[in-house]
Image 1 (cartoon, helix red, strand yellow):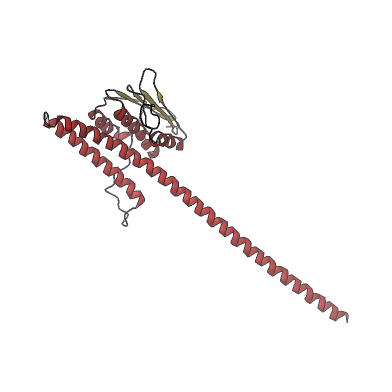
Image 2: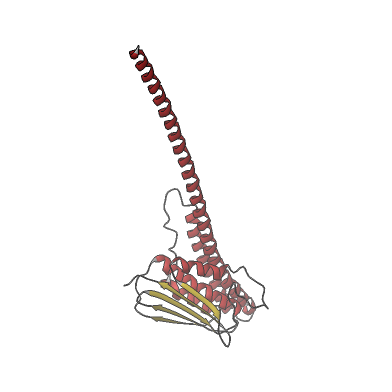
Length: 263
C-alpha cells in the first residue's frame, strides 16, 4: 500500500516538475524573443539615426560646394558680360575662371556621389580627395580674381592634422570668403591660420558689411542659416568652438578653435 502511495506521489512530483520545466522553457523563449525584438528595434533606430546624420553631412557638403563655386561663377560671368565688348581678353579670362570653378564643383560633387553610390568595381581613382588647408592657395586665388583681395597669414609650425579637421578648417575659410564676396562689395579680407600646440585656430576678417549666411541684417532677406549652422556643427564634432559676429566699424569676423592632439 505504502509503495503504491509513494509511487503515485513520485509520479505527481515528476509531472509537476515537467510542467514547471516546460513553463520555464516557454518563459525563457518568450524572453529571448522579446530581447531579439528590442535589439532589432534598437538596431533599426541606430541605422535611421546614422542615415539622418549622413544626409545632414551631405547636405552641408553640397551647400559648401554649390554656394562657393556658383557664387564665383555668377561674379565672373557678370564681369565677363560687362567687359565682353570693350575687353574681350579680360572676358575670356573671366570665363576661364568660371570653367575652373565649375570643374571644381563637379569634382567635389562626384566625390560626394561616390559616397552615396560607389561604383561596383570599388574603383574611385577619378575622385579627387576632399580639400584641406593644402588647397588654400587655389581658393584664395579664385576669390581674389573674383574681386575680393585676401591676405593670408600662417603662424606656428604647420604639421599633419586629422583629415576631418583639415576639411573643416578649409570649409570655414571657404564659407566666410564666399559670403564676404557675395555681400561685401569693394572690401578686403584677411585669413589667419595658427598652428598652436594643442589646437588649430582659424580667423577670417572681412572689412565690408556685417553679413554672413544665417546672420543677415534686417535690410536683407533672411537665409536658411545652413552655412553658419553647418560650420558650428562641424567644429563641435571635434570639440571646438566657432564664433561669428559683426565687427565694430563694419565687417565680419569668423573665428574658430579646433583641438588637436599634442605634436
